[in-house]
Length: 196
Image 1 (cartoon, helix red, strand yellow):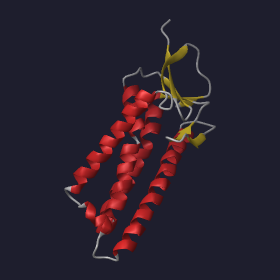
Image 2 (cartoon, rainbow, N blue to C red):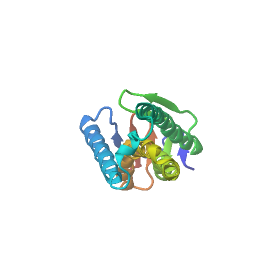
Image 3 (cartoon, rainbow, N blue to C red):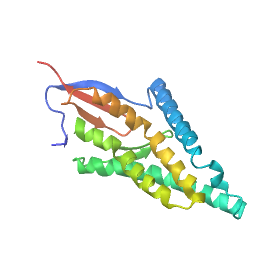
Image 4 (cartoon, one colour):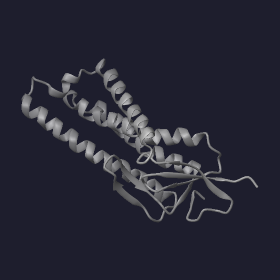
């Protein structure tokens, strides 16, 4: 069993993570995302110059505007697909009711009436960054040089945007194996078995 609809007897809240309410944590998580973004971008510049994005040998203004438009659309689509993957895995692990939304800072997928096991929740948390990381990683070398950075910037967005998922994964790994996680979409509440 990967999920349940009722909290079993003997379980109590041991931790909650809410990036909307915990401004300090949100700041650190977002700073980590920026560091990842910069590190990935700078590192790749040693292999593929950023000038490829605006290759002047082509019809410069139009080619750049087209790539920029595709990049913006790709990032928007990525956010929707990222949350959809969370939702697919929540459903696969037993959630009956899903909730999707946008808080102004974060897009989210949640299953507020479901308590996931630790293992299931770790898969749910990491599934989008792994799945889309593989897809984008395979796609990147296949596109022409002028489009490399369009795909790679979406990959940067993939990895840096998953920093909240990385944070909860690292935090939950240190917790007991028998914990249960309720993800409302904007917060995660972790329940642990109480000692008798």
